[in-house]
Each structure stands twice: as structure tokens, then as C-alpha cells.
Image (tube, rainbow, N blue to C red; front, side, top):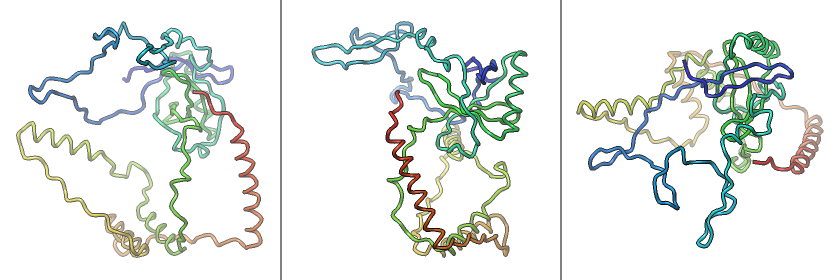
Length: 313
């Protein structure tokens, strides 16, 4: 059973649900240690005080905010902040995960979503309000947006259901997401036929469930093979020759070849992937009116966004 990493409550209007937060994922990566090559001794990181030039224990270390940096003539000015002061911040989210809104799941951009945590009902008293929130979320087909304070900062989160359990996903604040505008390629024309072949390739690569996908960590497996080979003094496994990425000179030919290769991989020789018809273009008269509205809305949204003050750290 994973240990609790935070104990608090979910605040849902006037309803309070005591919960324990546990990690929802596991990291199976192989970890390496640093060692001294000459004698194999472990290399460890020790914490030293700059002024006393000595190692200090954890009990002697505190947190602080650097107001001014150290110079040749003056020491740095540090404002000390204790753990007790951090735990007693005047925030409702310091003690609870406060639900502030409910939105359709489709409205959440996946780029905002980060690590996931299971929320476990804490004791019998929490069982009924916990189940109430689970069933209400399930019927609404929405997710809850919440705020909470962990590790010295207030965070944004999303609550959803997974197998009748509440899951909290850490989220990035909207102003932490960079715009991809400057990364877009130069304007090019793509034909309807090329899009249809791309859709055909997608159809041949579609699976009904993610569990059907043979996805595993080949890097970790390769590292484990190297470690085992060196441990038993055996020859190291040989890396396969890397294929040079081919230059796409004929996009249609590359798409057709990719479709055939995908069919062969799935044992679908001689079958035809479903080709989706593209929606017909709208009449020019209707097309002229719509962009004008969108442009006006975009200008209004841009004006509002520029008038907002930046979120404080």
C-alpha cells in the first residue's frame, strides 16, 4: 500500500471530504549512483555553510528568500521562512483541495495536465460524501477544477473519476503555457487526396483500446541487459544499426508506402483501409461573413487578455 503524501480534505461548497493523497503512478526507471572510478567509492553530496566552511546537518538548515545577493562588500540579505509559517498560510487551499468550478473534460488542454494522485477517503465519516462526489461527477460527465497548496506554492488541479476513485491531476496555470505560434512551419498547401491517405494510414494504425498497444520501456530493458551482461562478464548486446531517416520527396508515395507497411504489420494483406470523405467547402458568400465575426471576437479577447495583470508568483 503506497504511503500518504498529503492529508487534508476536499472542499465542495459546504461539503467537506477528509482524504489521504497517494501517488497514482510508479517510476520503474533504473537509477545510477555516482562513484569514484579509482576505488569504486560512492560519491555523495554534502551540504556546507559558505561562511563557516563546514558541513551542516539537516537540523541546522532552514528556508529563506534572498532579497539582495551577496557582494564583495555586503552579505546577502535573507528573509527566513519557517515550516510552521508555511503551514499556517492564510489560504483556504493550505488545508484543503478547494473545488472552484466544474467544466467539460473536453475543455481541458492536455498540455496543462501533469502528475496524477489518488484521493483516498479518510475513515468511515468520509465514505458517503466521497461516493456522492464520485457519482455526481460521473453523471455530469464533467471534471472538477480545484486549487490546493503543496510544497510552498498554490497549484491548480483537476479531479476526475477512475474506477470509482477520485484522481487529482496537477495542472499548470494558464500563464505557464507557452504559445506555439513562433514554432509553426511556413504556409504550405495540402491536397484533399493527401489528407485522405493520411486518414487511411491512421485507420490502419487505430486500436480499440490502449491495452492492445504493445507499449513498453525498451530503454530500461536495454539498460537491464547491459547491467546483467557486465555482471556475468558476458559480451554486451549489440545495438541495431540505426536507419537513416528518408527524405520525403513525394508525400503521396510515402503515405501509400506507410499504409501498406501498416497493413502488413497487422496481417491485413489485400484489405483496404477506410477512406473518409472530407467535408465539402462552404459557399463563398457564407465564408466571407464568418471570419469577420471571429476576427472581431479575437480582437476583443486579445484586448481583454492584455489588460489582465500577471499572476503573482
